[in-house]
Amino acid sequence: MTNLRKNKKTWIINICAAPDSELSAYELITAGREISDGSNESLSCVIIGHEASARADYFFKRGIKKIYIIQGEIYKNLIEEIYSDSLAQLILKEKPDKILFSAAKESKTIAARLAAKLNIGLISDAIKLKSEASGKTSAIKPTFGGDLMAKIESRSNIEMITIRAGFYSKAQLLNPAKNGELINFKPDLSQLNAKIKLVGLSPKPKEDDEDISDAEIVVAAGRGIKTKEEFEMVRQFSDLLGASLGITRPLADLGFASENCQIGITGKTIKPKLYIALGISGKTHHTQGILNAKTIVSVNKDANAPIKDISDYFIEADIKEFLPAMIKKLREIKGMEGTARKS
Amino acid sequence: MNIIVCIKQTPLTDKVEFDSNGNLERDNIESGINPFDEYALEEALKIKDNNPETVISALTMGPPNAGEILRYAISKGCNDGYLLSDILLKGSDTLATSYALAKAIEKINSITKSSLIICGMGSNDSDTGHIASQLAVHLNFPNISLSSKVLSLNENSIILEKKGGQNIEKLEMELPAVISFEKNINCPRLASIKGRLKSGAFKPVIWTIYDIDCEQKKIGIEGSPTFVSECFSPAKKSKTSSIIAGANIEEKAENTAKILKELNFI
Image 1 (cartoon, rainbow over the protein chains, first blue to last red):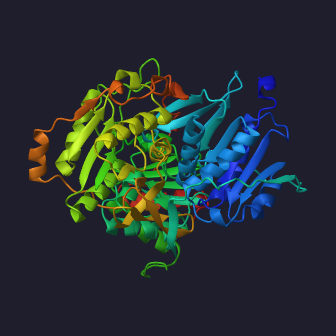
Image 2: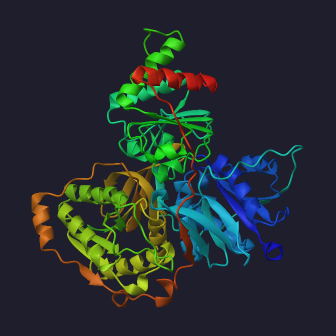
Image 3: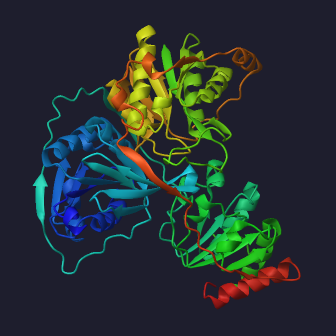
């Protein structure tokens, strides 16, 4: 197997303008190492963006030896065509064997366009990669919202795979930091028939809810929470514990909190020290996102809810009654009896 | 203006089965329109609200019974529906599917030119989100993915809002073009009584691969560079949980607090 893996060129693509692209790239480094032969030459990084070279150091410091830079004003906004045409030219010139992208939706649409342009296969949303005896890489991908896992392979000479965030650890900083080779690539975009132009730009309103990917304590609400008032109690409980707030997909769809705090196979994968599940039944697509939580405490009025089977502690109770009692208890402990909600 | 909305029939239940080749057995599952397509369909219908002369065609690729989601689209206000259905399309991945859909769109366009091809952000079953971008390549149309709003539209161009990385972008795109819309951007309407009545008599235009002038080597299993080699249920971690009990809710809360304290979380 090692021989077949030798001399295969694996690339990770970092799209600067995509949200969370820096952190996801560190996970791609780990995934890329796993499928490449471990030699310094086999794993390279492509950074594409307005000021892409500013990021090169982050990758050198994490052991990448060769970085391709595609940069310029034109990449300031995520116009798929410009990104995919630029990447296609570099790929056709250098002919990598395997290309990894983040599965963030902004990266995925660029990868999809690129794959169609190059007429090659694209495997999406892998959570685990495996090197096959043939030298090919197979990918495990959740389907049907996580109820079923599919192993997918590509027959194309260039294998392209997008990888979901949260399933690989982030590549660590090397000490001492190393340097590497920086290659600037200038794609020829003169043929590009620019049919899309930016006519306005306004800053994105800041999301109210924090990113919970690295939270130590997470209090999460599921379908057992029916009203905004009940959800407000969840927030109070979460605040009293100093926890971050999470929700399941049905609650995200109802707009109770932003998608930023949605946990599960279609949301975030988290690994908190404590996870408290309130009114969450425990469907596979949700529990796949908390497999690595250290301690799970769940509260559900159904004593047979599947969440019980993955919980360390289970409380059979109606959320509507449990939360007020719990909030009162926590306030007593914190000496906040009678005080209003913590600000 | 003519608009084509691409929709997909997807399973409604959690119980899914695959055949020995790893292809989805779509025959015995309860199915409906992919929920993400509802938002795309609604955006097309909103354009028709403002320009009543707009003609919306719904297009789907799937098994013969996928005609039902076209009927649903008609009940909401689409004008006609096209079903691309052929056993040779089975096993198509996103590259092959987008190619076949592009060929069907070209066929529709050979009769009346469409200015907009509208898709949802992805599907709830395979969940790739590739189709809109790949359709655009096959059709050689510009495309904007994951738009959240139509700001203005005329015969030659459309201005869309898109939530980019740090900013909200307003992008102007020449027509014809492909757009995919985000989820949760509108409240999809219910079908009117008139719409329901109309859909009762509806019969979709059904095409096989021989109707769309496609290269057979680019569709189905042969035309799909990616394939499912195995399917399995996700690993489940099983624990024996300790029950935190109590005679009443106050006691349960008190005992829960005790445990959280023991674990050093309070």
